[in-house]
Image 1 (cartoon, rainbow, N blue to C red):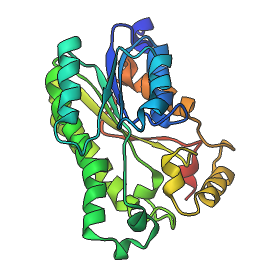
Image 2 (spheres, rainbow, N blue to C red):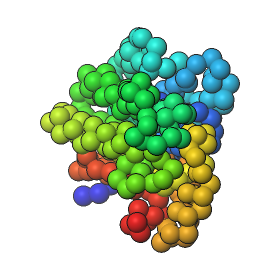
Image 3 (cartoon, rainbow, N blue to C red):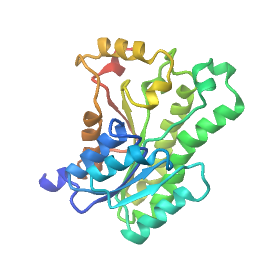
Image 4 (cartoon, one colour):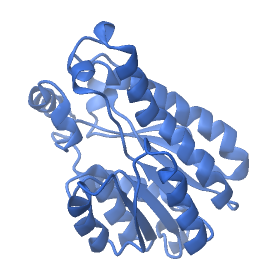
Amino acid sequence: MIDSDYFNLEGKRGLVIGVANMDSIAYGCARAFRTLGADLAITYLNEKARPFVEPAARAVGAELFLPCDVMVPGELEAVFAAIGERWGRLDFVLHSIAFAPRADLQGRLVDSSAEGFGLAVNISVHSFLRVAHLAEPLMPQGGSLFAMTFYGADKVLSTYNLMGPVKAALESAVRYTAAELGPQGIRAYAISPGPMLTRAATGLKDFDELRDAAEERAPLGRLAEIDDVGAVVAMLATRTGTMLTGQIIYVDGGYHITG
């Protein structure tokens, strides 16, 4: 029997990593989580980023607002320690961070440096696995883990370059995480919006052309906005998503089926 519990997050607690500002996908997700009743912890990259993230954290009434640079030893661990002390448990985590050095990102993949490739994988992929490792003991009754991917993981896009194989690795990491943590009731998803005008997208070469072409191809005639993505992610975090795990969930107006 389906009841209202399938569509709310009342009493649930979640962590959102990767809010850059109030235009970011992570903020759209945070807003949707909060709309369905969840209590939230929000992170910011560093003191330079804090003024851009703090208004978003206030807007969703974040109970915890913590620094988190996954490349600073101990910071990610400190976030989970603070959550454990404050709440004692966790119901969902959104991982929405990725990085590649501009020179490697905008050049040919075959010309990428080992250092740049390794850094991109460390920040964009391995940090998700670290999140899963740290979240597991705080999810004794199950939970949900979300990562952000992109169509360029599956198809070659001339503008995506280095991040194509990096996001492909992330999608594989999500599948393996879903398999390994499934017995504990922990689900994992890779969310794949179409091209969206976020701060991260500005680092991609010829992004405007990519977005315009995708919008023309999308069967629904438009691409997703941050609240479209947030609505889907929040739904998956509820009981509605109980029997879904390990999938790539496309939220792109159908763009991915036209390639």
